[in-house]
Amino acid sequence: MSRHGRHNNAHTVQPSTNEPKPRAGELGVNGDKPTPDCIRLRAYEISQARNGGPGNAASDWIQAEQEVAAEHAVKH
Image (cartoon, rainbow, N blue to C red; front, side, top):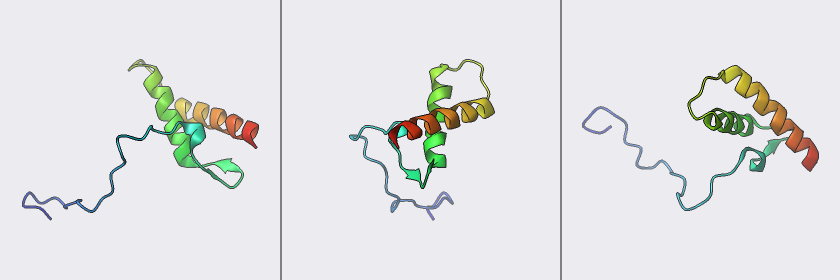
């Protein structure tokens, strides 16, 4: 722990800022369905597209599930 009572996370690997961030459809899949991380990223992209406008996390998640599943079906 540091002197401020927090754990020192110096050993934590940080993502490179030089690499482009993957879009939801570019992440891996778990067997025959998209991973939760893939859906989570797409839901985040949907919420960000509203630019702070009103929205609902549950509906964002459902929309993300549908979009990512459809994209996965096209690729496979």
